[in-house]
Length: 505
Image (tube, rainbow, N blue to C red; front, side, top):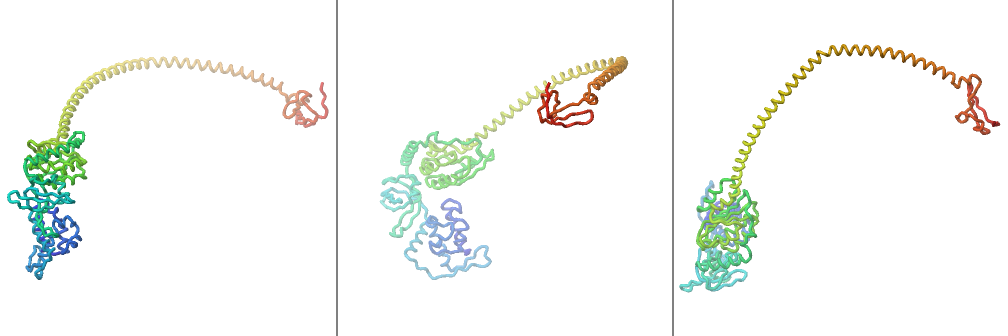
């Protein structure tokens, strides 16, 4: 890595950032400068191999970078770089002979540093992919040809017409194919209060006809917002006014610095708004102080207004104004006049919550005190009732105790009396049982005799028999058929026989 070239690149970047009023990284990041100092590109194609350099970056800064590298490599001086133990020797080369193209590139690179504003009268206009126009001096008829990219022209929101007076911002350059001097225009602004007012009224009527000012289209500010996106200039009293009034509830604020003065602030504002488009925030805040219609031109720009309309989150606008309200305030979801009021709007739901908390605190304490009073009364009443209840229990206990003592006093006599009754009952039971037992024994003896007399087996011993057929007693000869097998039970044993003849009475 060539430290001498890196040092010059960083110095050049600082100058560019100061001229453009932007952060260093918006020109080039450190890594990009280090890659340039390492690769030492000599052509446009060489530059495109470095990450962070595309067509737009090359158009804006490419010639400067190549010139710095050529200047360093053409120099014969020794450059002592901070941090190097030895001086860095840059070899001297022969004086370079430029081609016409390289010469014009060198001229344009030098002219690019002249970022100025020019005022004049439009003498011709041609919009063909990009804007071509001429600017004439009304005093002596001097003319300068101007060029402007179509997207920059659209962003300015000015409708170019011959004869109108404008101020343009940009830098001079030589158009290489024709060798003519042009003015590369980045911003156009109208001159005169009348022209600005006319453009303001025309755009206001257009946006109003589209319904962009209606309340139905606008989003409500959320209750209890926490994440806030803030767009304004870091310089001036506006941001201090806002921050001194917003810092009570611990918000998470994401701040993007942007120019807010005049038409030249449009690009910064649109870039800042687009940065927040996909960010997770609860509300987007855009603020600046008051001013004239001319100084508030950026907030009457159609491109910026349409970016605001497309934002997914509510937009809170605090742009100070005198008689003409900025058009951005009409399309914002909520618009107030000062940054301090913006802060109050954001704090409003939190303030209401604090007020409700104070009310709830007072109400809770009041209700708690009332509950304590009620509880105290109930406890005292319950204490009296419990005292009466237990006194009643103690009285009943004494009554029961006396009754038990009386019962115990009489229980011995009762026990003796009952014991006597039980003793007599036992004797009576024993006598009755003995008598019944004898009666039962006599009846059993009689039953035994009767059973003995009627026992069929006793008849068998006398010579009788019992004939059965298939297990059933035969009582009549008609129950038997010839050939039936009969079983005859005798006093001792059994006989099986076959019926050969049957004789019926």
